[in-house]
Amino acid sequence: MNEKLIKKAYELRNRGFTTGEIADELNVSKDTARWLILQGKDNNNQDKSEKAPIDFAINWNSLGGSSIRMKYVSAAMADMALKYGEPDVIVGITVSGIPFATMMAEILGADISVFHPIKHRKMEEDAKGAISSNFASVEGRKVVIVDDVITSGRTISDAARVFKDLGAVPIAVVVLIDKAGISEVENVPVESLIKVSRLG
Image (cartoon, rainbow, N blue to C red; front, top):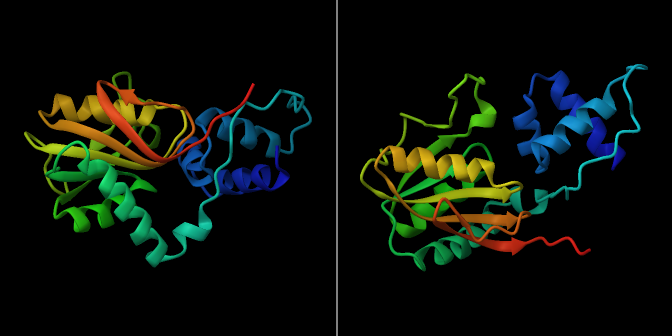
């Protein structure tokens, strides 16, 4: 695995990022983030021969650093969402789903909401993600869930369950990149601009 990723993961941990936040920042799975952190530790007792999880690190800095590029990509994502009807609310999954969701909401004339996934929250026994109370309500409304990368599908699955429990109607999940090859989660269709497939 790339030494730069190992160094970055360890630096983020030292700055107080949780494993879930590191996974989001590097666009890798939580398991990969955990492995990267352990590889960066200066600990002679640590078994550094442990095999890295199979994953792909995604770097979309050239997109994220340009509001114009983000706008065009968000327009394409909004177009994919319309395939399932007109949403009332676009919900961005923190952190990286929010910029796409914000631009999509503007393009589609929808409200905006924010979802905090379980991986960013304290792990209680019945922990699940939560909707921010600072944004639009989702109760009884058609929602599109937006994120940057699907790695395992756990986050979008958690989000779909939370929305359904709140009485919302998730009509689609739209992401920039799908690393898991998921076409549906919790009976909600999943659309991505890019699907990453591992051969073999």
